[in-house]
Length: 158
Image: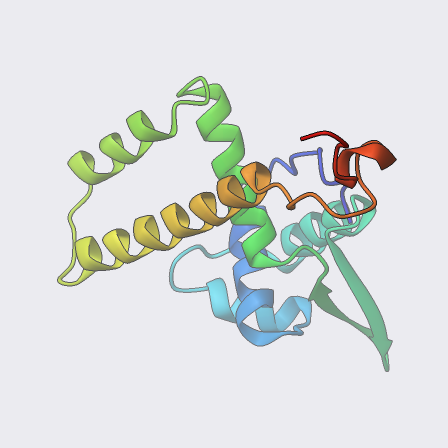
């Protein structure tokens, strides 16, 4: 598995193979070839080469079943999505999340309910940030043991 700060750059073909593995949990070269046949016909040797490269990078693993290798994704789909988004956000948008979201909303066809879901996600994130901010600014009240010992003694002559 790649380290947290490493971005696993994937080719279109590698990503297609990983999608098959994410959908099926495990698959052989033949299974992957059949799954990709309609959209992208690839030779079994090409798929095997791509899987071998993914395995060397720690993104897939395999077990032997008879004379075949049965592959599974080590890189989780959510991790791949997160790495790709970080790369795009930092690279193309110089870390400007608002501009990236604006570009997404203006350049993609939205389905019914998409905007409502985005609003929910924003509200959830705002609540998380508020809780985090509140916890940073929250100070505990002074206790009897805090401060100088004389601070709690009544002054004489007052």
